[in-house]
Amino acid sequence: MEKEKWHEKATGKELEIFSIFSVVLMFVLAFVLETPRGIWEGMIEIVISRDALITDYFELTSYGAAFFNAAMVTGIAVLILMVLKMKFTGITMSVIFIIAGYSLWGKNPVNILPILIGTFLYAKSHGASVKRYIYTGLFGTCLAPFVTEVVYILPFSTGVNLLFAIGAGILIGYILPPLSMHTASMHMGYNLYNVGFAAGVLAFVLVCVMEAFGIESNAVFIWKAGRNPIMVIGLYIYFFLAFLYGLFINKGRLGRLRKVMKHPGRAVADFVLMDGSGTTLMNMGLMGIVCVTYIQLVKGDFSGPVVGAIFTAFGFAAFGAHLKNYLPVLLGVFLSTLITRYGADTPGIQLAACFAVGLAPIAGQFGIIAGVLAGMLHTAIVMCTSEMYGGLNLYNNGFSAGWVAIILVPSLESFMVRYSIRKDKIKKMKEQKSLE
Image 1 (cartoon, one colour):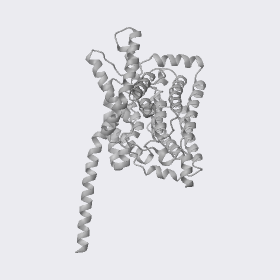
Image 2 (image 1 turned 60 degrees about the horizontal axis):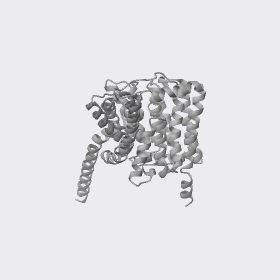
Image 3 (image 1 turned 30 degrees about the vertical axis):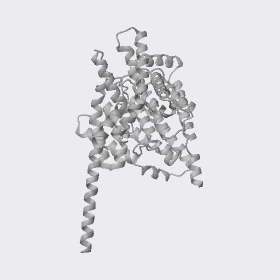
Image 4 (image 1 turned 135 degrees about the vertical axis):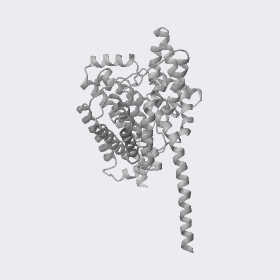
């Protein structure tokens, strides 16, 4: 009974405090790295620029402006969740940190708002509480670049284009809740980025409609190369602090991490509800440290997109991913670089390595070999999918992961069933022989 009370006490508030701390930290970093004037000019540049994949705010503006933007967008998300009095659980952490990550390359305080309004209108029109759909709306801001793009590609005046952009964002926010409910059944919970998959499907349809009218959108590539040592050290310190905070909440008990590692991770797997906030924060800290170390080892770039991908993996370590089910998929991504034309330091492959955390449930459910296969297949698919929608779905890896799960899981389940039947037959034959 005492244990249950402790577990209940150790969920929610600690994560809310940590989320607020993270937002404040990004604000402080912004003013340490850039002057107020530089931040203001950088924010204007971020808001008025195209945000299609890949638009790295570190390269487009500066570190300070990029972190200020991330603080603003993440702060809006945290504020909405607090106003709605949402309990901070694993899915909350995943949505907060995927938003924080993508605010370094694609989301800004302006282009996310129409989508959130659309989700709000969907809830109201169906007589439901906004709380029911708020996570879908926040995840759905992955199509924020579409809102910005409409302003630039339509042949009307800027004012008219702006109205169309707002309308497009509201439409996206309205469509995604029912669409994401249907796509979840397609991959059966083996892709943690379900809304990313739904958004990819929607973006593909919208881009096809625009092209039918002769309106085309092309992907861009703005990328900051190199490994800034201050960035690397800062990330290590941040993730280590997350681990220590979790350890403090758990009163110094490391053993609870073993319990997390036993979960396959198939959605819905909310580690906060199952194992408490302390254990979850420790798991998140370890995930962040492993991702930073991997990028270091392959001599990758700590660009805005890569740092954003690391933050995404960090967030989903609260909602389905842990080292035991992630490392096989990561290994698959790396092994693919040894036999394909892509190198481990190729920008898209660096992102795939971190975002492969979305396929962790496959390794958790079917084992190491299945996880490796998922990682290798993900690498091949993700390098092609962005062109399908002109880079307007930020969660391109989520779209790719959905297809990997759809293709791989039925085969794995079929193999496992046949293997189980064969194993039972062999067991019965042995039992029969022993009786003889």
